Amino acid sequence: MGTYLKHIHVLESCWKIVKDNITFVRIHGSTVQEIAHDVDLTNKTCLITGANSGIGLEMTKCLNCNGCNVLMACRNSYAASSVMKYLVEKNGLLRFYEINLASLKSVKNCSVEILENEKKIDIVLLNAGVFGLPWTLTEDGLETTFQVNYLSQIYLLMNIEKLLTSDARVVFVTSESHRNVNWTVHNSLAPTEDLISLPKNQYTSVKAYNISKLCGILAMHYLGYRWLNTGKAVFCAHPGSFVRTRLCRNWWTYEALYMLMKPFSKSVSQAASTPIYCATSPELKGLSALYYKDCERCEESDLAKDLHLSFRMHDLTQDMLRERVKSIDDSFNMQRKSANFARELKEVDNNVISNYTG
Ligand SMILES: NC(=O)c1ccc[n+]([C@@H]2O[C@H](COP(=O)([O-])OP(=O)(O)OC[C@H]3O[C@@H](n4cnc5c(N)ncnc54)[C@H](OP(=O)(O)O)[C@@H]3O)[C@@H](O)[C@H]2O)c1
Image 1 (spheres, rainbow, N blue to C red):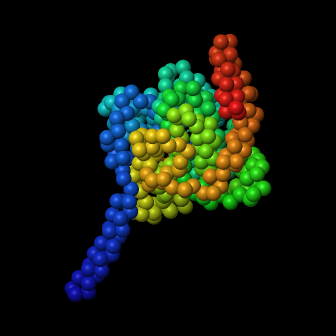
Image 2 (image 1 turned 180 degrees about the vertical axis):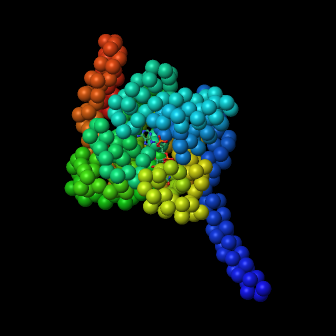
Image 3 (image 1 turned 120 degrees about the horizontal axis):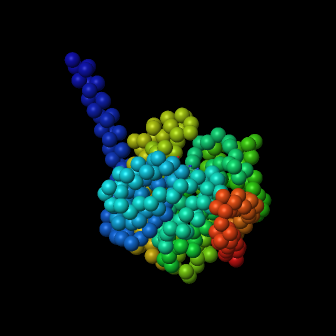
C-alpha cells in the first residue's frame, strides 16, 4: 500500500510539472479572440487563402465574428461549403472562390471571378500552404511546394491588386523555418529558377518549404518598397511552430512529431493571433514591411532582409510567371469564347506585369 501511494505521489508531481509547463507555454501567446476582441471589421472585406482548415479556418471564424466579409479562396469546395454552412447560419458574410494553387490557370480563373464580383478588398491573408510533400511538379512544371506556398499566391495578389483599398493590409503567413535557408553569396547575387523550384536531385521537403517561406518574406520587402507612401501595408507573420493542424498530413513521421510537440506548441487559436494582429491591429497603422512572431516585431534572417535580393527575386518571379502565364491565358480565353473577355484578361495581365515591373 505504501509503495502504491509513493507511486501515485511521484505521478502527481510529474503531472504538475507537465501542467505548469503547458500553462507557461499557453499563456505565452494570446488567442485570436483576445487579439481581435475589440476590432470592428464591419464593411471590411478580407480575402484569405486556405480558409477551410487549421489556422486559416480559425482566422476565418474570427474575422466572421468581427463582422468582416470573408472571401474564402480554397481548393476544397466541400470543406469550404461545410465551413460556410456553419458560419453563414451565424452571420452570412462568407463567399467561396475556388482556387487550386498548384495551377496558375486556376489562380487566373479565381482572380477573374473575384474581379467580376467584388468591389474592394481591405485585407489579404496569404495563408494556404503545404509541407512534407514528396517531390512533384505542378502542371506548370514547377516544384509543388514552391508554387503553392509562394508563386501562385503572389500571382493571385498581382491579379487582384487593383481591388485593394488605399489602406489595405496584406499578410503572408510565413515561418521561422525561413532561417534555415543557407544560400551562398553567388546564389543570392544571381538567383535562378532551380534555386527556388528545386529539381528532384536537390529536393527535400523541408528545404523546399523553408525556401518558399523565405520567398514570401522577400516578396514582403519588395511590396513594402513598392507601396511606400501609398497607405497600403504588408507584413509577414509566423504563427507558431509545430501547431497541430493538417499541415503535417503528408508524412506519418511529421504527424508523430507534431503530436509529440502538441503540449508545448500553440493552440490553433493562439497560432491565428499573430496574422490577425498584423491584419487588423490599429497599433500597426503607418508601419509596413515588418516580420512578426507572438504578436511582436521580430528580426527576420539576414537573407530575408536583403532588399537587393528581394528585387532580384521579384524579377525572377516575373520571368517565371511571364513564361507560363501567356499560354495559360490562351487556353483560358478559349474556354470563355468571349472576345471582350479575352481583351479584358490580356489587359489585366499586361497591367499586372508591367505595374510590378515598373
Ligand atoms: N502548423 C504549423 O505549425 C505552422 C508553422 C509555421 C507556419 N505555418 C503556416 O501556416 C499556414 C497555414 O497552415 P496550417 O498549419 O493551418 O495547415 P493546414 O491545416 O494544412 O491548412 C493549409 C491550407 O492550405 C490549403 N492548400 C494546400 N494546398 C493547396 C492548393 N494546392 N490550393 C489551394 N489551397 C491549398 C489547404 O487546403 P486543403 O484543405 O484543400 O488541403 C488548407 O486549407 C501555412 O502557410 C503554413 O506554412 C504553419
